[in-house]
Length: 506
Image (cartoon, rainbow, N blue to C red; front, side):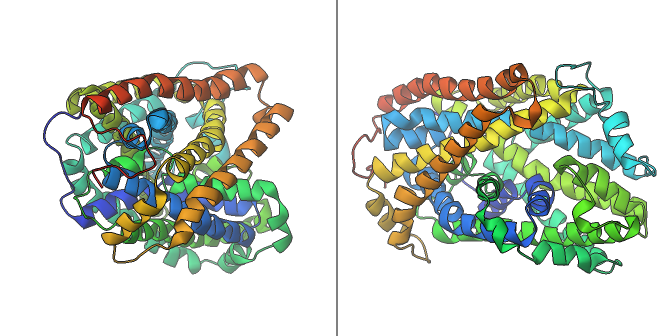
């Protein structure tokens, strides 16, 4: 079990801010706007909202209840539901860990661009600057090359920042989030107001908000929307379970889940105005349509936006603010993913926090070096696809099955309601038992069929093996092995619950 006395959040606000910080990250300002851009603006917004209501919020409530009502890290909580599902908690943690290894490298990119913003070093050709000067991108994924020193230095700084943020768990996180959650929102408001005053801004906003109803018949759009919801809410990583385990007894679950979920989506929605107003302005400058401005997700933050910044008043200041916003948005998500890993190791093996923090950081840094090489962007893209489209869907499916079919979900619902101001109805049970697992399973099957028919991104099959299938296999097999240790720990403490009834602790 975890070493030392139980640590709780300083107050409810600290927990809410930490959970919001975990949910709100680069995905809100980079991934979400790009998904909207790729899938026709308003069409994606509709699918995103549906995914939030039918799967995102129910799953968030589920994870909060696992952590607070059942207790412990993701492996411990799911192991108490049923010994057969402790491994799922570890799979969630391992998936989150793999994501952290490249998420921190994207933060290194942002840290480098923060420095470049002072002189607008990207000049009049931000695309060449990003791919050649910053990444030194090679001709293919198998031409790995050597690490880029500025990215390696940035990665080391990022990991130092992450470790210091979680040095004492909830105690230090409680203090950090007051800055890292509120500051990016203030900057975002400045960027939105400034963006809406630009010529051509409303062309971008129109593209953002206008749905193409026929696009909703596209299965890929729905796959992207559900992925974005799971990714942006930080469900399926073990993060929210670990954070909720630091809640005091009788804490409100439902209100907290709605506050966190809606705050996350509101940030993404508002961030869309900042991004699409700037895209509309840039399209007018280039004399092209809004639909022809960019080609990929990374280009939004590191090519398109720097190009836009060149034309803004107080350009260096706008660049500094933008990349400070990216970094402060990203850090909460990064250290929350690490905290899930740390909590799992401490719960299962009883290792102290300091040693666990350092071990996880060093291991993640070592793996992250591959993403700082000249082929790093290719590997990042490949691993990200498999972790989000395979890992997240699989964990969401298994979590919902574990609680929905191997636990007294109705009794858990009543217990959640007993400490919550806002009550959830039987719709939550229906969602957990049927909607979430079915939607996750269908999307997982679609993804598997897609990868059988063709390699992702046209990458060689051998790279897909090492960057996709093997990491997924590690998550599954690693989860199974580590899950056995978790079950031993739970049995030792005599708290395992392997029945249809709720555990004694609730």
